[in-house]
Image (cartoon, rainbow, N blue to C red; front, top):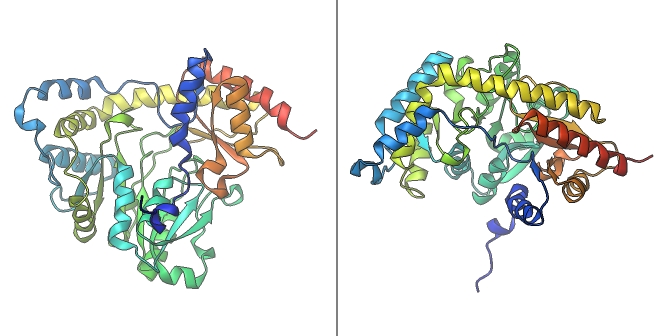
Length: 392
């Protein structure tokens, strides 16, 4: 067999990829597994999306290639939603790219802008698609630690000048996975200025824009002056509409940037199944009624998780967005060891911070994706494991 390429060998393990098999093995042994690992809620998509899928499946044309164009109605619905939600306008034909989930678009974008000798600026801990796209493009990753003392914000002013001079892309994700941090508008303004001064493309991953609480309304990066010149923004139906497995998302940007991503995609896929895009239209049209009720469910789960994990011995703040708690571990308790012990002893799955990069060490992520009762049970179990592992 031929040897693997340098690009392949540079990829780190993808931590979540092994969890389903471990979970299956435990369930086969009769273990009652509580899975708080992936950001994958046990809630239903909008009924309108399901019905839209059913309605079009009998249409022969819906089963043909969508190619890069896809379903024009999906482009139009998503751009109309962007205008309604954020007050920003994009041409659905030239400034919009339909995606097979935002993950693939985020990964593939690097192929157009990052090559040998170029740098991509990557928050750590962070979504591993940022790193994967960079490494597969033979670029160099420069990781920027997200720390509680600066609100888990990427400190662009701390990036060394020689690194900034080679940077092509800065990945940014607020509301943030995994830390649940949110970014003040003045911070986003500063980042846009920084990117404009250095000709860096700002890749804004806005997957959690609709999962916010307590009156907080996350912005689009395009609400900030100057963003249209330097940014591309990614959206997904996954978290907002409980449609993770449907793999449907989009990107918006000025014509040149959208065209670059579309060109890369023309060589690697032939478009999302158009019936899924039709369901996406229905989901977007249900936004005003579906999302508030869905967020209310997540708010109840958030409150239960915060209370329960706090009572179990974990310092815990109530996040204003996302579906995550980012919880610190005591010094001397490695996040992977905690994850493994919690899984083996108690059948509870959490994501160790180390699984999202070295910068995540010292923390673990809880996804409040199940009922308050199950969250309380998981927190109690986690507290027992903490007492076993914590020094003293």
